Image 1 (cartoon, rainbow, N blue to C red):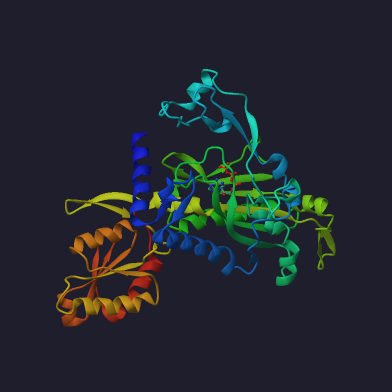
Image 2: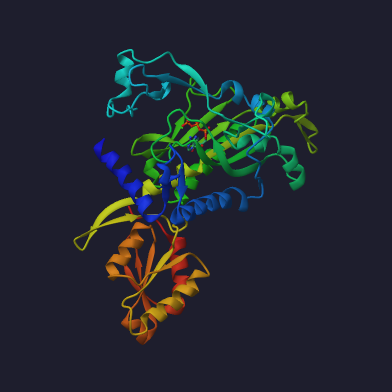
Length: 452
Ligand code: ATP
């Protein structure tokens, strides 16, 4: 337990120190469960979103993109079932007043002053909890200047509904035919009872969702297809395979509308937890929207002359949770030449900075040559120039930021125009002609595989 807390503490401190993730509104004492992405974090998050978009939209002929609004017609959430059912059971401790999600007592610790370190399950066993009450997780707000019930709207708790209500807009505009999908990345809001574990569970977060519309009867085949595609995606992201697993929803976990559901789970320091859900949602969503909107949402297949309500296979991933996963998975400490280093083994495709450029010393024309290399590479990918301090310290700073390559200009560069390229993971150094540097690094990045 102590080692686990230590790892999370170290990661949180690295994130703050190096500008990956800051607590929100910190100068006011922070706002519980809200975080801001700093200069390195915003690059990492963008790279993850781009990598997802490339896999799910850009390289596919059968998926279109969408960016729907966060506020939607309130009837959407009645049709989706969120108004009636998007609830978690909540219990309060009569003694210390702490609040817990009733289905997450196991492993939860009390956070109330004077009770810190006490297991929530102990209070449960001692009968200190109130009866569980259902709490709706949707954030409610008002549209327009008058706060009255008629103006109430919800901040979307998932991006999926924006896709469902647009299915025929997208299909007609893009001339797609079933089977086809719609992908979207965007913010979602849930008034979680117990957010925590850094950015793992927050009240404002981003989702990367894709809804695939299929003919009834072909749904299980597509479900299996998407399961395989999605787990392979994490491998491409550089997440270690042995840290990933599927978890099949049993009869008690399965949502009433779902025919099948699997989670992709990662082994976080605090246990195996969901990263992404893959669900066969049947025709539930479109049937409900047809019922509540009064619009016919069935599909007519010109080729077979059949009419049906499409089934939906959903892949729903959390973007912030994926960022956290890549950071945890990449975090490592080792010792080189007797000196401890902290290193992030981020795959080059998501690393915020791809290479550091360093003049060995700040004289003899080395900074000028290094600056020229830096300016040239900057046109192709993010690079960082650093001439401050001993070269070893400059390498360490880049290791901690997850930068995969270090380029050093030294005395020999001035003689023969070669530089050294140091690889973050293997520490191998190779001399490369300056004019071959770009293809050399591009090839290395493309061929990158995490060392075991
Ligand atoms: P849980 O059971 O953990 O509350 P869920 O099953 O309700 O999660 P989904 O509705 O399937 O989650 O959401 C899809 C994905 O969105 C999740 O796999 C997760 O990556 C992300 N996600 C959901 N809730 C949160 C949250 N509060 N903070 C960060 N990411 C979240």
